[in-house]
Image 1 (tube, rainbow, N blue to C red):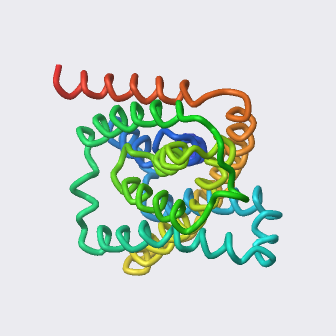
Image 2: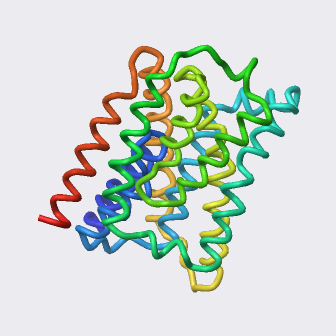
Image 3: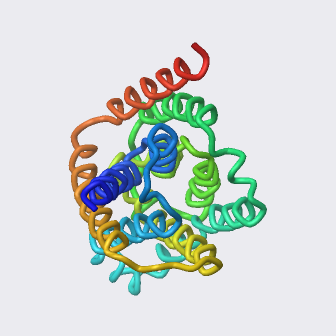
Length: 255
């Protein structure tokens, strides 16, 4: 029981921290499962971890989400920006093509390559914000970039912030756009997971509850920390982390 508890804590920390940082949660979860035989890793646990992150983003941005009833333009933009990922995600999962991408080689090169792309995007001059410059053109651009997040190692948070920074949105607003777009993405991932789970016999136990709670705590803390961090600093620390992880994985694979 104690070992199961520790494994759930580790998985929750990986999901909660890496989901909202530009470092790819799916890549870290795949890597930890590849190097360690986790007994608690399962479809239902994955769903629980995503639900914890979803609840965290909803609670943290509850005021912004509540105010969307007075800002239908922003609500529509969030929906439109999420459609490309939802459509392509459904196609990849329903055809099982997504499993061809779930390997360490893909993660190594995407982590490295898109980390470098993030660096160049973060050097752009800042002159745009959500209230004045988020429109149909910009949100579709970001939404199309978000499709790449279906590839493990790309990072949904990372690629949406990369797109927003290329469009010259400031770092805080780039992150807020990314976080708002994560709500439909996490909802979709949870829905697809539940759809698959319905085809199997499932049992709700204490590990499921712990997974939701711990993922929520780690996710909420990460969101709060990250928004405070990027208000003062660049994204370089995450770029360096991605490059080091990518090079480390390449060394393991080829040397």
